[in-house]
Amino acid sequence: METLQDTETKKVTTSSPTFKGSGSQMLLNGLIEEGVSTIFGYPGGAIMPIYDALYDYADKLEHILVRHEQGGIHAAQGYARTSGKVGVCFATSGPGATNLVTGLADAQIDSTPLVCITGQVFAHLLGTDAFQETDVINITTPVTKWNYQITDAKEIPEVLAKAFYIAKSGRPGPVLIDITKNAQLQIEEFESYVKCNHIRSYRPKPKVRIEFIEQAAKLI
Image (cartoon, rainbow, N blue to C red; front, side):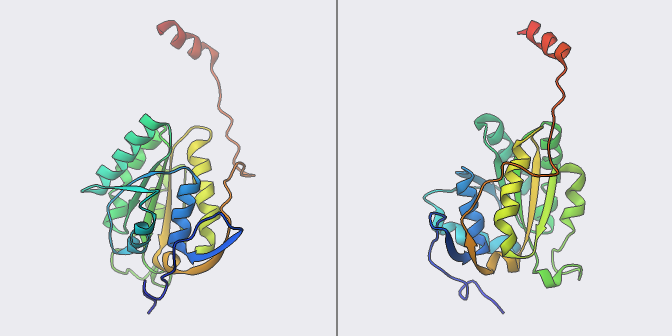
């Protein structure tokens, strides 16, 4: 069985055209490239590879440990609304992921940009009723702008970039990325992280109601 020791590599950055590292390292590098400096979360077995990798990024990423995942996502909401940045939250699979649902719904209603990362069982165990395996994608579809399950580390850079773009653009809102444990551990040679600034099938066009703006202006 693949272990963290088998996949241990030195800290990598996205300054070079390509680098070799784990999916967890790629995820954390991507967060840094997106301007993230603060993460809220609560660890668990299915997301432990990301937490283990987080030690090497303590100088750039501050992780605030909460006592419950719902507290973590609400803290990320508050951070997003006061800082103007995208709030980021980590949670494990099963009950960890389902504890985010209320916060996701609230963020969608309040147009708060969030990117939530949840751990998931190994890809080959999906659909087998494995320990703490829940279908977080279908559970959170009604309360997110977009969600996606990553089963291969190669998907991480593109999916993460899309997540931040969708969370911030148009009417802001929450996005959830579910990452299987094998993808977190998987060693790959990644290209440099590239931010997303356009998605072909996603072109939000906010409708401006001048009369509402005028009413609001009168109240100021």
